Image (cartoon, rainbow, N blue to C red; front, side):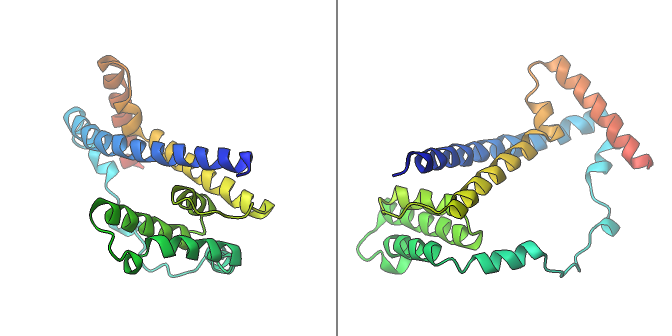
Length: 194
């Protein structure tokens, strides 16, 4: 396998695992942050609840990115590798495979469907490597797609890590948490006034 591709797949795996960890921490942090905020200032929590008029459920416009995704999805090389993987993990093809191995392959199939829906070369390649499926070297455009998928993971990790709850939760000492929480309460109260 091309060393650059090997590096990209390793980076994708690392970031994907990191994202899982960050989501878990964030989920824990959210609950604790809201409880702590309620203790400091019960009114500030209102700023975290969206106002019903701010929610628009009737936006049926399709963006250009969604249209482009459908066009890109006709990639024959992507489909070829998708099919190779599907043959090994499709629930109808498992035959005598049972137990943990069957559950693992079903999980891989779910990830394969996600990779297909998102035109995610990085995820597709990761699944192929995990199942020892050989594939051709990627074109420059496909490498760009892998890098784009890696950038999406980085941005999503940062989104969680930059949240107030995550920042508060990961402070090193109790005094820093109290000061940060007080500052957050002020920000929330200010947003209620606007």
